[in-house]
Picture 1 (cartoon, helix red, strand yellow):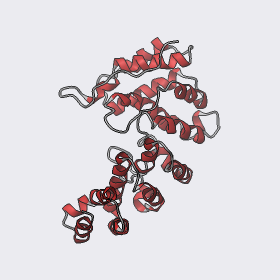
Picture 2 (picture 1 turned 120 degrees about the vertical axis):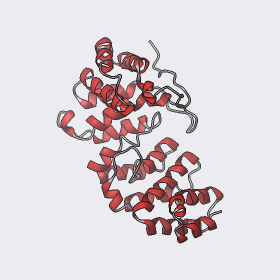
Picture 3 (picture 1 turned 45 degrees about the horizontal axis):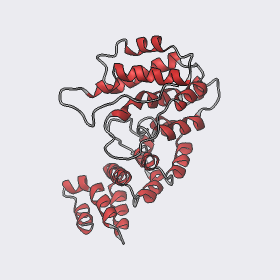
Picture 4 (picture 1 turned 60 degrees about the vertical axis):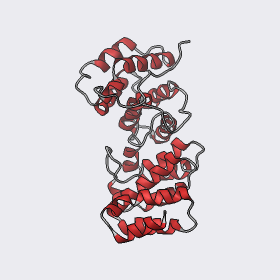
Length: 280
């Protein structure tokens, strides 16, 4: 049986090489190969032709959406059936949280597929696909972050998604834990904003409390950036949270506090400067 794999990619963005090239011919060819390994009827040649047609001028996010559209066309029409094939086509999870390079971006179209076709029952013969979509993103985020693809679920199914996060925030896998914080950031860069969380960040506070002392810097950095997002709309809440965290804080948590308040401190906000000084 042929081996499921992802194409090699640079460790970082290369001068003169656009990031979109991560999703080029080699990625499309391998994606098609992986899907056909799991689902032999998959029409690999037709898929590759459609996925590559018109791809050249597209940005990396546009390419991911374009390839996801081709996946939709050539996989079974029923979402549950198609996404089960996608799930089985995944390579093993990442073994570390840093220095994974650009190769995991291979899974951007997979995430886009779930975000676009897995939110409601329209593509699933009238059956609710929520639980299956959560399962797929649980697996995908261990290979490439689902911080963008999870957001349509938060917007359309906020309470259900948050309850899933309250379970995932205690998961053994740091990629899953980080998703709980990063996915709920109200103003995550390059992502759709979460208006409900901009207005009221209360649902994410238990996640931040749980993860503020996480053993993995990858997760703690997300917590700090999340509090920084909150500070843009609810400065007093962010200040109160960080001030509360100061008591008995480890050096790792003190770094989280300093990082969270760096933008208010740059604006010379007195309370932010005071808390950051206490967190040294």
